Image (tube, rainbow, N blue to C red; front, side, top):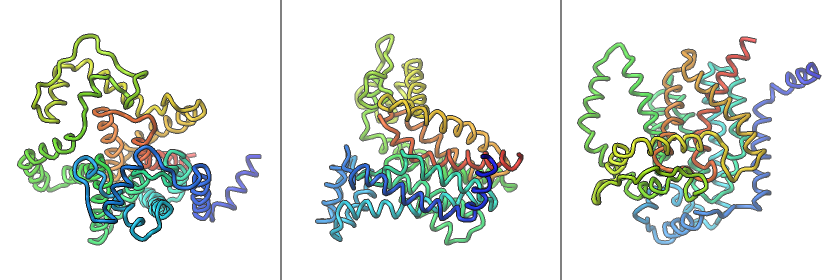
Length: 382
């Protein structure tokens, strides 16, 4: 049996890219069938209303909705040309197809042309249901997931690229920042990779100049942080002890009254005040959110869903962590991918997770790429 499978694999391998493309098409059709076409979900109404305002009268809503401006703008283009929900989903699938190609090509660049890791990372990106299903949802997740993957692909191109590749990376990073409020973490991950490269360069002057610039810009960075947190009610979720938003069955209960920040305290200062005055409680809260976020053991999931997550994701985390420390893979890419996952994890630990994996799905590409590179390393040693 093993010899037959091996022979079949050898014959199919020259066509692996076509097989991946076929799998991608089948997965999209499967989700269209499952949800009976474009899927109207919880937040779809406000995005579609925002998009209609943009398409009909060029009105961009202020406040919290402005943090998601790219997606309503994306939707408005399809509404404006009269293609409606099906046009939106078709557009999301088109961007997803480009993102899937970026995952393959980006991973292959990091693997120095080896196709095994590229195939595995792309296969996981396609086959993992909690990634591709969002392509038929009228939500920001599909576009955001695709932009994170496109950012990865663009980042790998600048290693030996020219000015055009740097321009593409900058454009994709800006679009990612505009897609969701936490989109800034992808740009921050790229900045951290750049800072790490400057720190390791023989000439330390650019590194020192950058640190000085960051110190000088710290007041502006503090204002930007307060702006990001302004429309979130973190203290309410902290008081309720929520690990999952609006889900009280999994919650942390305080052993003694919490010390809350005084009225008028800024958003970022409120978090710092709460952390200083309630360190044990906040620590328990953050550890609980960490477990909920990465474990894939959500209370609403079926047993089969949880088992698949444990069997695939948990080993993938371990493999990705090992590969992040390997010197054989281009270091800036390792820093970039690891930072994407770690920054998103930190954001969830400070805010709150959702009942599904909509916050984990966008960063799984980083886990799958690093894990696939590590698996290829083991395979070549066998």
